[in-house]
Image 1 (cartoon, rainbow, N blue to C red):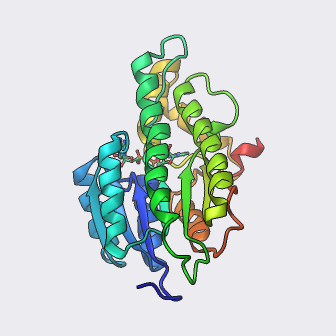
Image 2: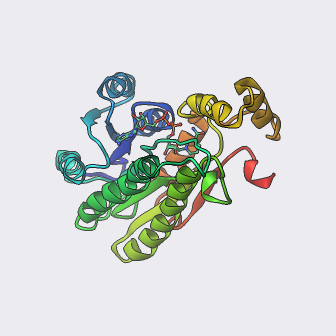
Amino acid sequence: VITSTMPGAALVTGAGSGIGRAASVALAAAGFDVHVLDVDEGALKETAAIVEKQGRCVAHTCDVTDPDQVDDTVLRAHDERQRLDVVVNNAGVYQVDDLLELSYANWRRVLAVNADGTFLVSQAAARRMVTQPVHPALQRRGMVINISSVAAEGGRPNRTAYGASKALVRHLTMSQAMAWREHEVAACLVYPGEVFEGMLQNVYQRLSEVTGRPREELIEGAQRALPRQQFQTAAEVAQRITFLATTPGMSHSGTVLWCDSHLSAI
Ligand SMILES: NC(=O)c1ccc[n+]([C@@H]2O[C@H](COP(=O)([O-])OP(=O)(O)OC[C@H]3O[C@@H](n4cnc5c(N)ncnc54)[C@H](O)[C@@H]3O)[C@@H](O)[C@H]2O)c1
């Protein structure tokens, strides 16, 4: 049973770390039941222990690149309340390789998690969302929030598979927004800039190996390029995700919400 005061149920992928963990906490604080999903069981347990302090949390170990695991997980999450109101496609992997050296295996791995995973989870969730009643408070049947990146725009010579996967997520989201609006299922994008809490910590090590420049120099350079000389925080991105999730109606379908410390303006 849903009421006009209950935000509903949310599913967050890649919830074991960084932005996914922060988003799970923020959505629980906003009143959502939160289904946290990650391939890393240990990290997922840690997240669940934190989220449970805010509200109801169910943990699902799942690899988003496996269609059967995804279907089974989304089905179980949906079955709890017979609805899923928000899905945050956040699971992702990064890649740093010189474009002449980038292997097909690395290209496929990044596309599989970032793009295929987003496609599979969104579709499995939307198939259920279109059949559920409109939520009285959220005034729609469901919402898909896909985490892309500023890397979706422009070239990234050392991070091409990553940028390409995020550009694919952008196109997928715009198509979802158009295809599902008649079902009152919204789809929108968040573009984080550089968040130094998750995957980025290892990225600068790899960038240093590929470019031959010291890691600290690369980090300082990236920070200096930002207007406030500060990286984004996962909590700031989580705030944007929660804003989208809790805004009633369909007006944010097709929206790209930048959360990038003006990185894009440089
Ligand atoms: N950190 C940044 O600066 C930044 C910037 C722009 C966009 N993003 C995007 O935000 C999202 C989260 O980034 P983060 O920095 O928090 O990364 P992170 O590495 O801290 O977290 C990613 C999570 O995804 C999980 N994951 C990886 N492969 C998976 C799979 N096959 N199935 C299920 N889960 C899987 C990992 O276990 C991990 O917990 C990613 O999509 C990333 O591309 C991050």
